[in-house]
Amino acid sequence: MLAAASYELTRDEISSLIDIKAERVGHDLTFVLQQHTAGTFEDFGRHAEAYAFCDLLDADDAAFGAA
Image (cartoon, rainbow, N blue to C red; front, side, top):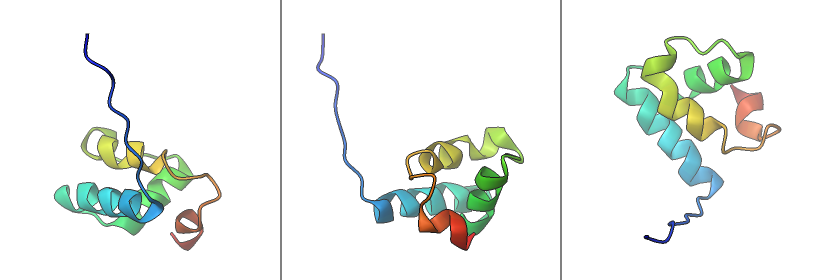
């Protein structure tokens, strides 16, 4: 059995990954953060990876307040 890999990401790296995933489906970081904060999850299937990265940020992260 292989050992599980563990990764540490900075807040900026997480934000960058959210932005990359959002841009691939035609949206931006702000759109995804707004949807995640509101709990509306528009077109969830296309944004699932971006929303998953949002969950890695603290709920009181400044990024959610700016969105």
